[in-house]
Image 1 (cartoon, helix red, strand yellow):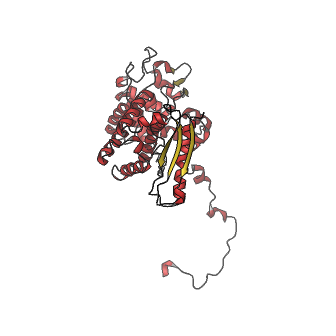
Image 2 (cartoon, one colour):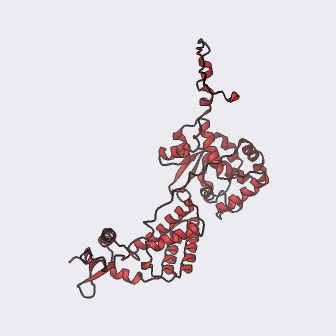
Image 3 (tube, one colour):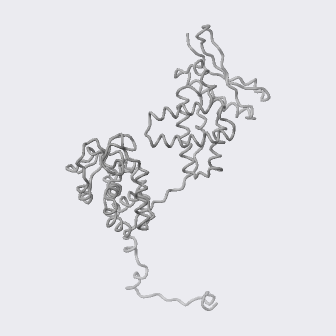
Amino acid sequence: MEKFKTAKLFDAGGDLSKRWFVYYKFLSPDTGKYCRYQLWVPQKILTASGRRDKAHEIIKSINSRLRQGFNPYAHSERKYTSLAVAIAYVLSLKENSCRKRTHHTYSSMVQKFNDWLISKNFLNMAVDDFNYHHAQEFMDYTKATLKNCNRTYNNRVTAMKTLFKVLVKREWILINPFDKIDMLPEEDPSVIAFTIDELVIMQQNLPVWHYDLYVCACLIFYCFIRPQEMVRLKVSDFNLKSRIIVIPGKASKNKKQEVVQIPNALMPVLMKLDLNYPGDYFVFGKNQQRGTVEYAPTRMAEAWRKFADHYGIEKHLYSLKHTGVGMAIENGINIRDLQLQLRHSNLEMTQIYLDKFNRRPSDKLANDFPDLASMGRNIAPVYAPLPSEIYIPSLS
């Protein structure tokens, strides 16, 4: 005997003054008979077509869940759990499944969410009662009250979708309330590169100021290694003999092991770095020294800011990546080599990145564009009398 009967719509014969609902049946483990479950179609939808569309969405979701093994008896025990408890549960799961910095980001977003729940008196709302309209109201709050830019807004939508997806997979809720929220258009982020003068200041002064920080700057400029990846690199990841640096899966952004080439110009810088330590030591550990304690990328940014402010440089440390890519393009390095060094999965990603630097024609256009004035040098001029009504600004 089938454990369930798929969902159907009760539309009250099309009467909009009556309650419409979606119902399905599931075999009771106690009685061995089918028990009917129903979900109301919102009465605030005032048209029959609108209600049918909403009912179809609910039916599709329920049937999909039933076929994947959803058990309403287990679900019924969880759906009344308070929203605050459910989100705290998800956050505890994320703590064991994602990186420390990612978990910190989730924690920060959940704190803002809880603040809003408290302001709305929703903290003890049953998790199953939190719907799309609540989710959209929260996102509107982040835009209007928290003044989130579109990029931050979109990042928050993505994070909340991810958190509530955990509740869907564990059958605490049937539908992710953040799935229908639209992303906002984002402005194309500007690419800020160092000037030659700023690069010279850095090259001449940073090695004396803090040599390990100078090495970090060079790794960003030459190898495009992200600060959050750099602080996870260990001594064994540096192979100066083969002129490569291995970015292990535990360190890389996409959690895959990758390799970057050490350019010739970077070799003298790395040769002066003391790597005579055990292979499992972090290269840029606590205080950016070799050690067993992982360093926070924010501390690296703070160390850079002290140096940059002292020498009047406003650029962020990571802007060295943009600078390195831009100068590599100008020096004619081909796109395939850049793709490999940037560790992009395809050339299309690299091309999108490069387009940020190629929005100005090259000097060839300025130097070689046809000159109108030179075209008539070997041709006799053609003269014709000017019309009497010609407009001459100097005489008007």
